[in-house]
Image (cartoon, rainbow, N blue to C red):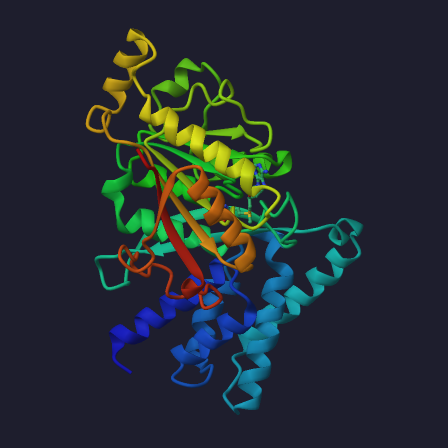
Length: 369
Ligand SMILES: C[S@@+](CC[C@H](N)C(=O)[O-])C[C@H]1O[C@@H](n2cnc3c(N)ncnc32)[C@H](O)[C@@H]1O
């Protein structure tokens, strides 16, 4: 194997581990890096760059133990030498694991720390351009599903990083933001304002903590100090059922985003109503009063006359639900264009074997005039 290929495969292995990819995916990358089996050099790499890195403390214990166990078993089976360090590390994790299992708090849903590393679109996938640090739940249903990371937000993030000019200097407003990954990407590409929202209180708390973990200030109402801080986001409670014109009165976004928010037919009419208010508000921007006009023309100087656009990434799990969305969108006079292929994002997460990009559709929505 060429040295450059080997280097890239080892990088993918490390990034998959940091992203907490399922153990079977990490193992598959380890095998690939070893040219078919988990060779001693690959085992050494894992020890030095993955499991031996103790930055996460007890949190990664179960995950690391599983990976070490599978790698040892696989190497033994393929009659590769198992390096001593791997056995020692496994022994250590087993003893700390049994200590943790005595702790009753482990029985509750666990939060895991994930590092999602986006590879640079311009350097042949060899350099990491952005790392988002996220606390996610092991329970997909926690926080009304908002404490887990869903494939649509990976796709939407790849789209943002692939087409940064669409988002740079724009006021971006996300619905159902969950763990907040899209917000980290929007800030990275220089959005002028990032407003993340969710209708679940525990999801919102987790999202705020995630923004702080990524050194983004969570803006508090009227805080002068934060007005000057470029790296800031707003995290707001917004339930689609409760949202009214007055609740959205501060928001005149250039762009509205959403990932994996079309999945419950009961919510669809409310989602359409909120989208309609946001897209219409932007259309009316600047007509309310003079002070407003000045503020807006300063902040959105290059875009003040453009109509707002919504980008919604979605996995169609249930065709009927999606049809229901399309019908409600047509009734609301939306133009919905599927841009999954015509504006396909670069693949920036090639090491994430569990992420099925082909399952995600990207919709561009505007209000027909
Ligand atoms: C499947 S998760 C997607 C989270 C995130 N966008 C992602 O892709 O990783 C759906 C999100 O929408 C939020 N949500 C669902 N119904 C909602 C409603 N009626 N009002 C506001 N937020 C809602 C949930 O709280 C959750 O965070």
